[in-house]
Image (cartoon, rainbow, N blue to C red; front, side):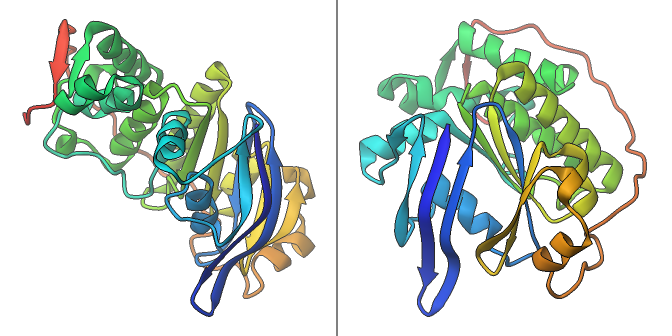
Length: 274
């Protein structure tokens, strides 16, 4: 599914990634574990070419990715991104935020006009159901909790119907209980769809709990690769050479539930502000 060969990225004299080689099969939930500044975000952004690698190549489904206009459009269609800070449009409804995941699969004119047919609206509603937010479809997104906003981000990524989801520290801003809720929704939704997930985390307990395989990164290099059961103290010492800091292993607390009535699906949806 994804093959990375000799991937490096330099910012002036600073080498953020050093000759990364990695393969991720279809449908795997891979956790990239490491401290802040280890190179995890640069790795994800190099895979989808939000950051252009200095050297090396990335292959998706046997085809090399490219940074030209056509290559980027194809890449954005097949690779979805979930960000640490939600990346939602606060004034739009939950449904309108999610249906934007369909933009890459629409004709250019329809995409520019931001008018979505009933089929795309139905896909968005189903993705909201899969993350437990169908009852929030017509609510303005700025009325949601942090955990709910991140689940909107997951639903939007699923609505894109991608081959790959890249999740960059998706629970770094959330409390531990909400973090597990969000990661559970992401893992289960992607299992149901067979989507490959690469998820950056810095919390050891989440990596062990959710990762099918863990890749440890430190100083822009892969220093560990294996199943959660192999993540022993020696491996952790390589991943966290300065020691495991506060917040890199946590205990659960509760998230308050809420509910709102579901509105009927429109035949067509536009993105005018609510």
